[in-house]
Amino acid sequence: MKGVIIVDWKEIIFIWIYFFCGAGGALFTIRLTEMYIGKIYHILEKTIKVENDVLRKMRDENKDLENEVEKLRDKNQDLENKNQELEQILFDRIKMEGAI
Image (cartoon, rainbow, N blue to C red; front, side, top):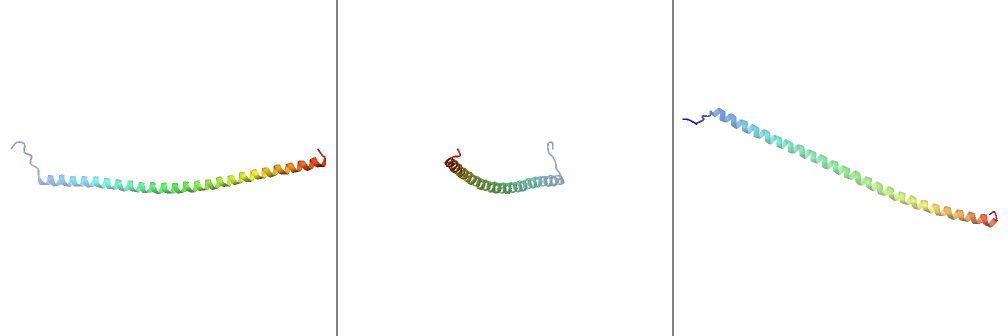
């Protein structure tokens, strides 16, 4: 019987055990990788949400500060106008007394 390969049943069992262990190890590795990718995704998602909340708060604070700056500019302009009026009144009084 030329070309016939006789394989012992122990070798067949060894091959099947080796195959299932290898396949199981590959599936375990894939599953483990999926779990770590899922954990990393959730960590990144939480980080993005936290950063988004922080940025939103900073934007709101910036808007409030810009409003305060605008109010202060308006108040400054009002004070400058009042100062000019007072200078004009003082100049008119000095002029009326004949000092100029």
